Amino acid sequence: MTLQLTQKERMLLQDQLTHEEACIKKYGSYAGQAQDPQLKQLFTQHQQHEQQHYNTITQLLQGNVPVMTSGGQNQQMQLPKAQSLGVQVNQTDDFMCHDLLMTEKYVSGTYDTVIFESTNPALRQTLQHIQKEEQQHGEDIFNYMQQHGMYTVQ
Image 1 (cartoon, rainbow, N blue to C red):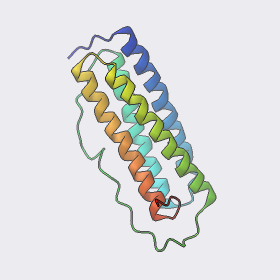
Image 2: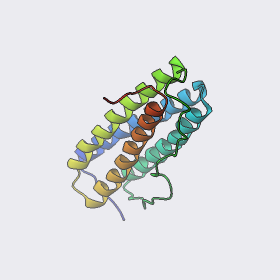
Image 3: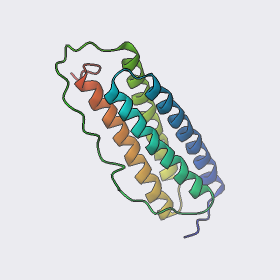
């Protein structure tokens, strides 16, 4: 299916491409810095998803609507339970988790604007699929933080 983008859609997609590129770089950098092997794996997995998002948006900008599949990409990462909430928290891991949770909140929110401003139903569906995965990334990070005593909900 060929996609005809409005000028506004093209501009908004270019912004999302920039956001996805930042996420790729951030997850990659943080995966290299993470002390906890579990967190390193989580960041690496999310970096791969962000690369898929980047590739999808690139296809959209070229006028192609990619086929979106749920081949495990948007399933929640299963985290083992933390031994205890009194576990020693690495300050670098804590900072990176907070930073990435904030990033995922922001990026997910920016997809709202593009989705609402899109005229083509196929474009909206593709972006909703990506947004759902961004929200899953945030949930994965939130769950990791909660289980490791980095984020307490009261």
